[in-house]
Figure 1: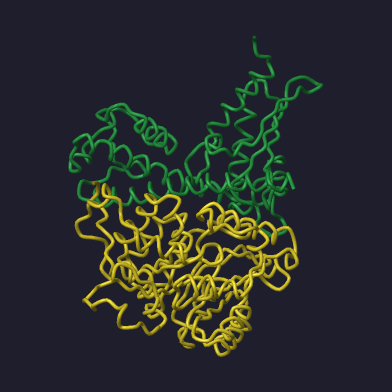
Figure 2 (figure 1 turned 60 degrees about the vertical axis):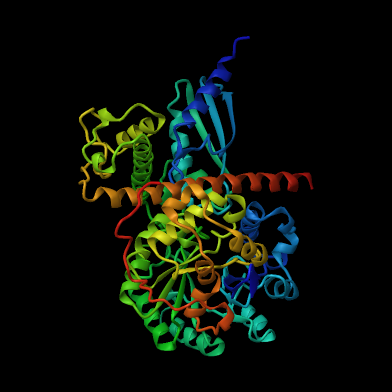
Length: 244
Length: 346
């Protein structure tokens, strides 16, 4: 049976959502189970509308992060060929209304909360995103180094290691993606162990930096586990409530 | 007091609440959402036999609390941390007065902490003085991420916050508990950011700054500042229950804390009624760092557990500890920065 155009469009929209990450957890919103529903409907004037429903682990998940995810989901779906309009809705969140309206109008986070007098501050959100990209890079760098050390590499040697010398692995792939996001060169001669600015870390500073990177990695992994658990519990409770 | 295998543990639960999150007290949907959010934490991370109904969780009796903490929970002293949330709840969620009334009816069992908001200006300073006199405050609990009117939150490093911290010093309030965990109001700023604790801890070396929830979800940022500031402590509320659901992650948290801080600056807490001390205390005394992690994190000795479970908080609050549960005083230097020879990998 051949899938209808609508079905393949829905699949492509899902795939597009794979690229949207929770900045704090550095994991895709589809993987985390935040996408509650996705539907495609034809529009009379031609083309299709994609409707996405997002649900986060708690009612009080930080609204700045929530806004980033809703806005990114909106952009990702809209970029899919054949999608004319995208409607991304955050459900069961204390600021659902403000965030949904803000993203739909492409107004920016600040304008979504006029009552609180935030002002428009796309800039603040981008800063936040950058902070978490840096953390994600550090965590990926630690995973890659950890793997190398387990394979027998000396920590002293990591400062001189280049990207080209690192064997292929899923960890290396993730690291390259994070580097690209930060604008760090991924050429074979580029040094492996760099700051988020791309600047090389000296052999002397490397062990301490790597130790901190480990704390970052543990923190991100731990949060991800907690958020998944909270989402499961929440959905269970909501289902029970619905049953009365 | 908890005793096992010939070892005695004096228990200070550094973070407990007596709240009213019941529908009758909810002002709006935020109040409903808030208690449900707490409830999901409770339900997700508690052993099944400890899971309450949402109705009981919303409002529990004083008898239940006394029973769970002191009759079965091994707690020798519990520290009340208020959470006002006046915009969400008609009579507030958990005020200093609510806590104080319970403490007065149960003498010797509780320590009552207060709260302040530097955005209350001069009037707030007077209010803090009254609160301190009424409840003999030795500590305060602060929420820096709360919105108020046009304000999106505040920082411990703000000039007005400094005036309040100066006031704390003058009033003998030496323990400042800072909530840097999950947010409770909309905000555009990163409310988890602990950088302001760093500034305040340097500026007020005579005050102790206890970062609640050990900075989760930013354990690493908390560790980074705590390693540099000897008067910064980590409160284990919310981190403790992972001992049941995810023991390896719990081992990592404790291991990281011991590495970046040391065993003298970590304090046990249940965050009652989100979790109950009985099972947490029992599990922690039985807990050991998994063997494959011991080469990087070491092991938890009875003395380390004794300090975390009660002695560290007892020091902060001048609580008398019975001789049978003390540890030999060894010269320790909490001010020491991170280990000079970090073991990077196991």
